[in-house]
Image (cartoon, rainbow, N blue to C red):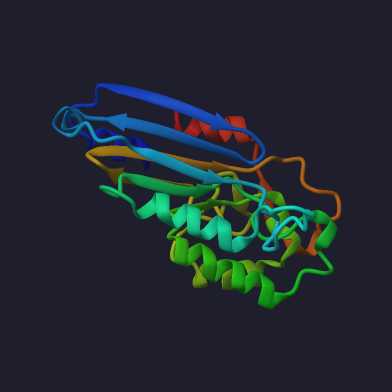
Length: 212
């Protein structure tokens, strides 16, 4: 359990909890004595609600955005200097609610390849990820070189989280825990069969379970 993992950490001097909402992603910074020996900055890069967008904005002057520009910038920051950087996505990465029917498998797989290339560390599952059925999500997870995270999506058959509930990363002598949570107010156009046999538990109650 996360309590057991925390108990094994020696020399904890402080906890810092930051929460970003809808989807929820909890960052827990566990700073130990090794920080005193390494004053290098730690950077947490995050993206959110990409919703499968891979094209520039189409602006008349100096088109902005696009997957090429984003990937180049994120990879630069992820790999520069002493590499004390983590890259996470807060959810709703692959598709927007308006595009459930239009979104195609090649586009989805292309975005996954880009995220692997950029070296994401984790993806917090957002509700629009369930625009895909569970088989497609499992296929995506098998392609990913990073972790799919959610603590409050529960498999009815097992009573356990459907995805990895939390992960602890160590970087620059600092251990950082990430707990993934999803809203219970799902996008109304999500097909009911895509969330069959899943329970979306209260996110705050789940957070208290992992971070008492």
